[in-house]
Image (cartoon, rainbow, N blue to C red; front, side):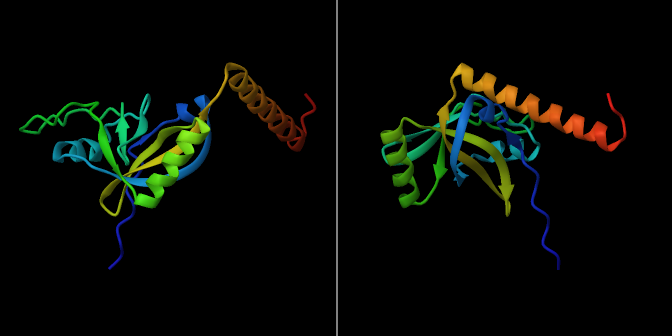
Length: 159
């Protein structure tokens, strides 16, 4: 029997690439309550403004919005409550060391299901300055212009 396809990504933090220089990434499990899983399966979540912190040798996810599932019968504890991330001890120690020595931030980039379990991809990131953001936008615009010129040239137009 064929294994079912992986479910699509529930939420992405597209703004993270704009606001941060992204570095090393890890896949972490996330501790959820029943109605939160149902809300995620319905595709309702937002990672914008989310971050993770190491507290007492555990990593906690803050500021991620998972709304209350409308058909649940009991209260799920708040849509922006902090949630524990599940990683190996060595991974947590490595992340904690890099955050403390390098002034990095832990940012969630995507939230998805893998083999029926909710996973979050976290990335070590360094904040961008305003001029970095402008430079990135200028580089992106320059590459688009080059691609347009090549496309026009291949089509035989000389505009």
